[in-house]
Image (tube, rainbow, N blue to C red; front, side):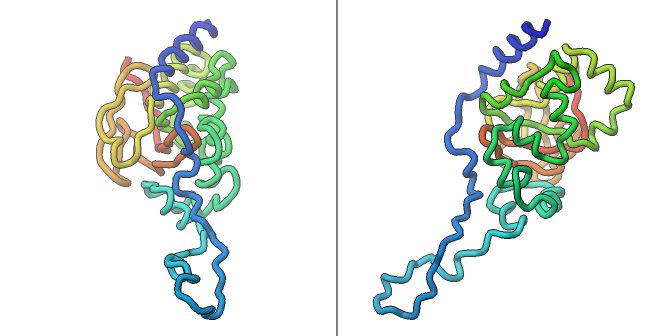
Length: 230
């Protein structure tokens, strides 16, 4: 059963776009340069045109967030609570998506679900890290809203767990300005994304923070776990 699931999932996922060069940059390297405040040493060409006021310090989470083209009411708070390290907006950009999610303090339950810790027959880490995706990521509070009996039953059913998890994954990367509409998921059915900006809806799930770049994916954190129709 495990082999069949992984073969099926890998086959579907291979339909996604392959490879993406230099995603982890994503405008987050806002080159903090060593501009010299030299005293007018002659010719104007010795002074870079974009030096001085145009260069801003890159310390605050808000600055990093602006560079990353994020959208959602929860983005500012997340950036402030995680200003640096592997779980920061910039840090997540350095790792493939399953690895980046494991460093995000709001995605601990999702990380367990995709890594075989909820069900040893459902381990999607290598698959998720291996191609280019848009990942709709329910935060921990979203899983907490699922009745415990339902969550326990889901964890024991490897087929259904795989369906639910892959319903949250769309092949290819979609930016905030192109994600609205209906998109076929890795699970096979379509997810409906409506609205725009911080009012975006993923089926009935609300946006927490989206447009987060990882090395191979674009992540949209949402406040509910979505369920495929069938």
